[in-house]
Image 1: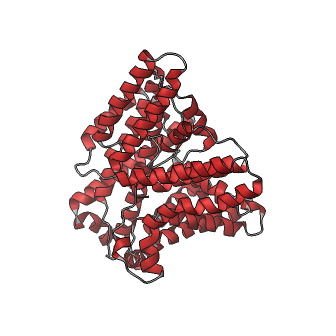
Image 2: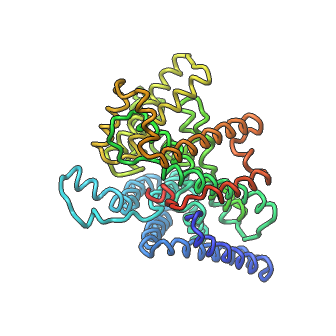
Image 3: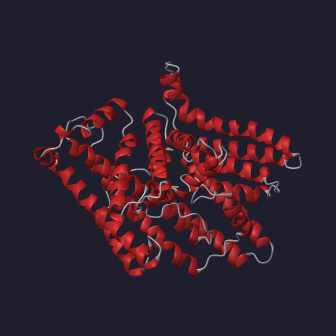
Length: 466
């Protein structure tokens, strides 16, 4: 759901208020919980339908098909369950493959161009709820667990704060909360959740959107400083955009009395790439680790390095249909392998050196994420690896080329570093990277900053494209 869009709040606030009145003041006893769950499902599906009826239809196809399949085979033996998983998982992935990869496969691999594929629009959230449903099937059948009631299952799959951009929740974590949910809101839950929503909107509206406007996408010049400036601006933008959604989703869920995964934990303050990926999009990283990396044997095999690189290649493909995403995933996996070898040798780097290397590595590989044109990617790579492209005139040229955009980038990149410093300080003092932003006084400051820096050209959350 688009927390930065007033239409979302125009639907959610009255919807939750009506549910709270019905379940908190009108209904009593055992009926309250079941009515609350049906009302929640209605709100979930209503919000999904506001995106498009096609989006709702694909979601219902994936979720209902998986549920019926699990229900049919739940009393079968392990062999039949395993066979079913081998069949159902590719079927569940078919809509995702069609909408997200058909054009890439036809044009780039088969060298054929079909306008039907080229005009496809990726349904919002399809990558996230598909992975969540697949994990549900695997966890239920592999552990010989009972299939829950249909209403509990559907709320687990469609819970509106996290359906379209994560976190990708697991059955053991979210399903029991959906089973027990009775729409009994409390002042404590609201007081705990609202600051996260404010922080998430600050990250998105005041930082990510302005950083997006400051970038020079498609840059083909020979100014290495400009390429690095774009890389750093995008590196911060994607963090504040992704984390902004995750914090808002966490806050909305908290307001409803539900605990979901806090998907980002200040990854840019880490001192090695392994720790970075443990703090970056945590639920997706754990999904790839548990269902791909461990399935290949994890670190228990001689070819652990292949397992890591393969896992990140799949992650690259998940993020987008393009060679740039595959290269991005391969580079991320390669740096993980290098760090694992270095760590296993018993060596370590001083904290500041480790942080600088990690930050620099991540800003370098983001270049392969935001530029989808491989000719531009190759040119930018050559630009920043040629020592002749680093000189004082080029450094000053960043501002001279477009003074407004250059000043905007300087301001918001500088502010981004300030936020990182506060996150680091918050971890040291409170053992939570965002605690320092959640006090009432801090929230007032964040609201003022949002009103001051709210971009006149807001952008959609980046994850909506995945």
